[in-house]
Every structure is written in C-alpha cells, then in structure tokens.
Image 1 (cartoon, one colour):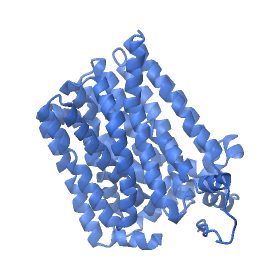
Image 2 (cartoon, one colour):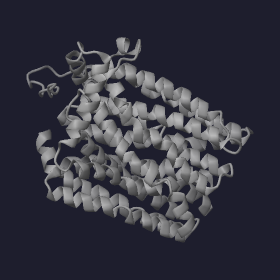
Image 3 (spheres, one colour):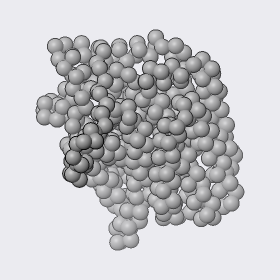
Image 4 (cartoon, one colour):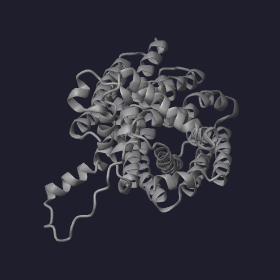
Amino acid sequence: MIAPEATPSPANPATPRATFSESLAVYLQRRVLIVLLLGFSSGLPLALSGSTLLVWMRESGVDLGTIGLFALVGTPYTLKFLWAPLVDALHVPLFTRIFGRRRGWLVCSQLALIAAILLLALTDPARSPLFVALGALLVAAMSATQDIVVDAFRVESLPESEQAAGMASYVAAYRVGMLVSTAGALFLVSAFEGTGIARSSAWMWGYVTMAALVLIGTVTALAATEPGQSARAEAATSTETAFARVLHAATGAFSEFLVRKDALAALTFVVLFKFTDAFSGTMTAPFVIDLGFSRNDYAAIVKGVGLAATLIGGFAGGFVARRYSLAASLWIGGVLQAVANLSFSWLALAGVNQWALAFAITAENFTSAIGTVIFVAYLSALCQNPLHTATQYALLTALAAVGRTYLSSGAGYVAKATGWPAFFAICVVVAVPSLILLAWLQRRGHFAALEAAKV
C-alpha cells in the first residue's frame, strides 16, 4: 500500500512573511488552481458531442427521435473503465519520459482531443448524420480518456485539507467549461453568421474555436507537477512488466469494490444518482428551441444567469460537503437536483417568457452544481489506492454515465409522447429509485464507513 502524501504543516509564526511570489508558488503547489483549470478542460468537450451538437442538428432539420438516439455517442464515458488500466499502468512513448506518469497521459489525450474536435467540425448533420455520429464518438472517446487522467490527478494531488476546496473549484470550473461550449459556442456561431458566413461554415468555425480552447488544459498540464502519490506508485511497480502492471491495475480496482459490503447496491446508486439530471438535460436545448426561443435567447441566459448560478452552486456544494456528513450531503443534493426539473414544466406552460427561462436555467444550474460537487466527493471517497486510482474512478464515473448515455437515450421519445410539461415532471419521478437506495445504504452504515476510512 502506498502511503498518502503528508499534509503540509502550518507555517511557523516566527518565520518571516512570505513574498507574493512565494505565496503564489505555495498555492500552485497545493494544486487547487491546477485542479480548477483542469476542471475547465474536462467540462469543455462534453457539450460538443452533446447539447451543442443537438442544437446544430435541430437547426439542420434532424428529427427529435434521431436527436435522442445521439445520446448513445456518449458510450465512451460509460466504457472508459475498460482502458483506464492502460492509463494507470502503461507509459505513453516520449510523453511519459518527458512529463511523468499522469502528466504524460494528460498532454497526449488533450492533443488527441483537439484533433477529434477539428474532425467533427468538418462534418454536416444535414447531409451525413452517420459521419457526425462517428466524429462525436471520437470526441467523446478522447474526452473520456482526458477525464480518466484528470480524475486520477485530482484525487492523488489534493491533501485532505484541500479536498473540499478542490472539489468545489473543479466542479465549478467543469460547469464553466460546459457553459463555454454551449452558450459560448452558440454565441460564436451567431457572430460568425453575422459576418455573412454561411450557417454550416459558422458552425465549423465555432467548433474550431472550441478546439483551440482545449489548449488551456494543455498549458495547465505543462505547468503542473507530477503528484507525489503517483510518483511513489510508479516507483513501487517499476520492476514489473507492462502486462503485469495492467493486470494488477485492472484486477485490484475491481476486486477492492467487489469485496466491500453492499458493493452492488453502492454501484447501482452510482448509476442512478445523476440520472434525473441526465434525463432532463438530454432534451433541455431542443425543448427551449421548440418552445420558440431563439438560439441567442437561450445562449444569453445560459451564459449569464446560468454561469453565475453554476459558480454559486459549485461552491455551495463544497460548503455542504464540508459542513455535513456524506449521507446528509447526498440527500440535500439528490432532492434539490430532482425538484429543479419542475421549473421547466412551469416554463413549458408559461411559453416564451424570458423571466421563466432565466428562473428555470438558474434552478437547474444551481442545483445540478450542488449535486455534482457532493457526488464527486462520494466517488473520491471510494478511491483509496494510488496504484489504480484512474481505473477505480473511471469505473465509477463510467457507471454514472450509464444514466446519461443509455437510460436517457429514450428521452426524446418520452417527450414526444407526453409533451414537455409532463416530461419534466417524469424527470422528477426518475430520481426516486436513487433516493430509496440512498436511504437503504445509509441504514446499512455505508457512508459512515467511508468517512471513517477517509479519516
């Protein structure tokens, strides 16, 4: 077992006051800022193969049923645990030697992601939806690989005293990245169109700009330092063959979960906790367009009010995670993110009303950010061994993506059959199974055991 990094002790009062540059270096050394910027890099590509792509397709005349099925391009987020052991165990030629175990994979995955987004930018939803699907699938695969590395880097980097701040910063920045690739991308497309560029070309240049923003994560990876836990894990397995390292990463990650008490119930809870968000989120952008709002109306509110709500919600989630027990925090996040869907039912009845849209977007972003921070805290608590952090966290987030990818793939057909007000009411109901599991696991002492192990 690899020993965790020691938490730095407070400075001696007798020590002279640090200069600004020294204070900044200490802050960077604690990696909170690095984790924040990597959160932005992780959140940026998700919408490019998701909600932003759906708006592009809807404007190109693709029907709702096909749009709903495009949730399946998120399959790599569900299956990423299959290649996570490779990230834990194998070296990337040249990159690992220059940058280290985690940073080498970070830089490599981000360069591949840029190439995938540029490829998707060259497709045309109206003429070749199959090529759009393949391009989106490639973006999702490269994005999922980046997530594997970023999650491992974050869990291994932050000492216990900085976990709450790190999680809040990471999730807030992740949501900001998503907003940039939704509202920001839509604004860019409109701006390009305003210069006289054809709509198809405007969408292409919008995606090219998003690809360039991935470089923020690349620069961050270059400025970061390799986590101490990762370096020690690398040293502990340096004498093993590549095959042995991969085998140990894979079997160790799975076996640790399966031997835990109530393992299957806990993994089912991971699948269902964010399902209410995923089910409604799949159809939010098409719903707003169908309701009669323009692309710019939606983008302006998401970019402004939605961004503020996301930032406040992210840090509110960090406060809740730090202030209350893990079980109590999950109850708060789970109930809030489910009930927030009713704001969209009200919007469907209110019609084209800017204030109603602003309220619905605010409620969704605020509560979703709270729920996500708390959920990330839970997943992080489940990962306790740096030899296979990437594999364990990838397994958990892949299971969480089942709700977003498979269970929500029929959301378009449900909305088509029930109408928008009833659809978002159904989104509240689908949260009930996760809350029942939460109550059962709490009674079994699952969350108390995790907190005890964490301490």
